Image (cartoon, rainbow, N blue to C red):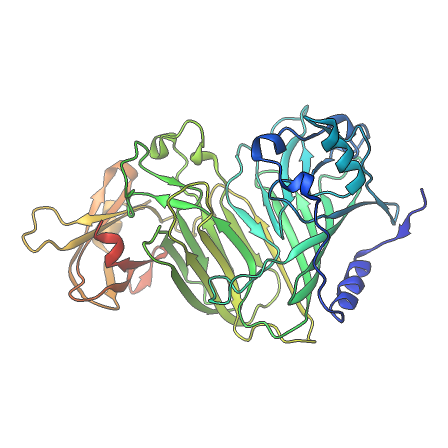
Amino acid sequence: MQGQAFNHDTVIELARELATKPFQEPAKAPEGLTKLDYSTYRKINYQQEAAIWENSPTRFSIQLFAPGFLYKDLVDINVVENGKSYPVKISDSSFRVPDSAIGKLLVEVGKYAGMRLHYPVNRPDYKDEFVVFQGASYFRAVSKGQHYGLSSRGLAIDVAQPTGEEYPLFKHFWIERPSIHQAAIVVHALLDSKSVTGAYRFGIYPGSPTRIDVDSILFPRRDIKHVGLGTLTSMFMHGPLDPANERDYRPAVHDSEAIAMIRGNGERVWRPLTNPQTLQVSGFMDENPKGFGLIQRHRDFAYYQDLEARYHTRPSAWVKPLNDWGKGQVQLVEIPSNSEANDNIVAYWQPENGLKQGQPYSFSYRLTWPDDIPPADNKVRIVRSAGGQKLFDDNHNREVVIDYSHLSSEDIKQIKVDVRTSKGHIVESRIEPNPEINGARIFITFDPQDADLAELRVQLKRDDKPVAATWLYRWNSKDWSQ
């Protein structure tokens, strides 16, 4: 088979040219595949012996997803070897299917719905699945010892806007074949949607943690005001600060428990997530952020008590910009949900001026999938947030409790608790030793007065300098009335 010359400039030029033309809907899978139910679709399995590079010296291999069920958009996939690009064909033996008619349809379609990358992450004699690209511009990854949880996206457009969200699609992938000595793999992707095209390069490094270096250049077809870079999508149902609305034997159910940030000025921020009664959108203004992510900090089974979902093994995800992102905001969207099967948390960077038609926009970032973000130099970190009615209080005030690790009794004597609220009144705040975690517990008694919403802000200071991340929380009367 004769290949075509390829490098990343090939994708950039394709995206640039595509942006000059009106958007065309991607090719769709035929009805015979899209009408399959979930149980039938999950019986369509790519044959391991058909995996790309399965029997070659390289330690990586690629398996592909069939179109069908919810995955209607058809995706082209090529492999790149020695600077040449070759399309990946579907044969009669590519998939194990529950019905021969399905197999025939797949061969006729000749395209895929996505792919998954394999590499010996957990032990040297077995190639684990560790990255998946499937659906729109979604992808997700795991590190050593983890199970899939939250996802990332190449781009988000008009999240939580009245006009409805637009979902750009990775319509074409090119996968570079690694050498026998390489412990990394490169994937290129062409993104397309009504509003923008884009050329992406993913440098993927499996391990502990797995990291993905993302380089992108976007070509807007129109001005885009609400665009999300480094988008993360997750699930939060309930936890100690936001208990379940209905009785649940599990004390916490979530893929992520908080959004964390390191602002451009170096300030660390920790904001617990909620499952609100109404849609909530929060913006955290910044300039040239140093990082943000959705974090699953608790790693003990006892915190979740879920034998099947194993939430204590779900990854965190951290976005670290590799170039200047300028002014903008980290935006957090929290969507009401009654099912842990639904992703209801979205976080991303929104540039202040959005994207302008005809002006290419380049951005780069490092996306890692750790258990937790590294602590600050002083190692003090927030390990738990909880809340409810204050005990033995005739005024029925609300109380928030925050636990901090790595604080000695001598440290506590020197610390001032700085608490502020945008509405209502802070009745009392106090700090006490918490020897169970070698740290401290902060108690905050709060009277919302007539407020429906209030932004709470807590800082621990010593000599007027912060000793831990700034704790933020949006108190909502509708959520706390349950």
